[in-house]
Length: 103
Image (cartoon, rainbow, N blue to C red; front, side):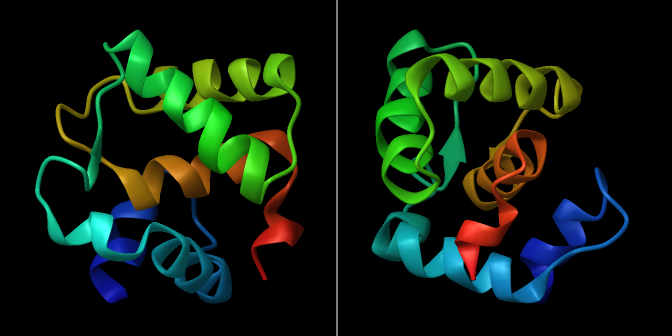
């Protein structure tokens, strides 16, 4: 957990550990694979998966709100070549004001 929190701290000062745990539990075994543990911000299919999966199912966001949040996170993480899925999801919840849905 601390590795995820340390990565998130690059982008935001206060990290909600319960939210991080909730995201890790949501992602499950996907985090064990190097490829699926990352978000490819240049892949429209990957961003659609984020929107239709985590953003819709876990955060309850409509597609337009999810897309706006995803664009914010992509911009926020622009300098990061390897975007951690946990960090991306955390920042998406933060950007969309849905952190409370993470636990």
